[in-house]
Image 1 (cartoon, rainbow, N blue to C red):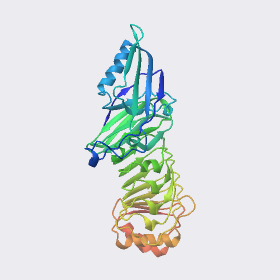
Image 2: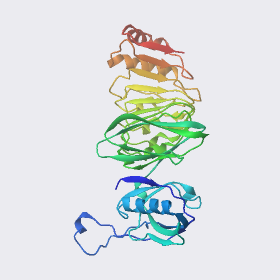
Image 3: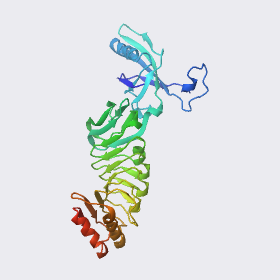
Image 4: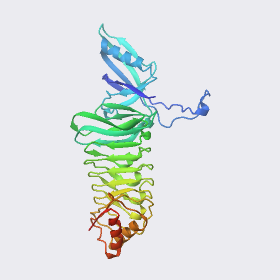
Length: 369
């Protein structure tokens, strides 16, 4: 059930109720009176106590309860005290029939109501942390019928309902600081995510939680870390610049990736021949230690091929020569294409001179040591 509305009245106390293990109703058992599938994770419940609500506040509570049809709809509880989940916003619903209101004077009411937390499965393990930011921003693509909620980490939320294609969403923070941005809802249906916040921190494991992701970009002075083997398996475009420390062997890139760019302080390693077969754009600079090449195994021409290792590693003379010879053998180059093999790579020798001349005559721009 899609979340709607926000509840922000501040309770005087919140008590943790006894969790319950609900029945899991499958399609095949939907007409039975008894269910044998019991959830392994309990549903968390909390009792919110209000010691002295004004008439207006009492009406706000009652209206919100009624607006959710007594527990049918879920919503955002944004006034969570710090001793419950560190004060993070929780999505859930009112427990039907739990609202109690007792007058203590003509103008004040004592009220209590029970809140049931939604299943954890709706929460995305993905998050990123804008550091020192005054604005958070993302571009998102989401298919028809899917909804996510962006929690910006400061109490603000943005609901995104598909279809949207590369749509921009931003949040202005009250002041520069460190916030945790996460998603709720159909997060595995997100197909594109661009993190536009200048300074952002995350990991490839958390990005990998967006299992439907095909397109990922992150710019600026981000400090994304982790092994590339943890990226979503269906990823076709990966662009990460900044101060990232991404690691891993290029043979573990998603097999369908066609565009790969990783700058910054990455320590990516491996053999160039293990690039995915459909690669059309490859750029890896930073502190990568890519150091091997035997023979070309990819089947398409990378219109841009840039390899600039600055750490230990780099291709030898023979490997650089063989790479240019393979580039020339069965690939047609054109104006605007670029090949840059510098950094700690060795300079090519006369062995590949003819191949480089052919590529240059076809219009490609070659830069070597």
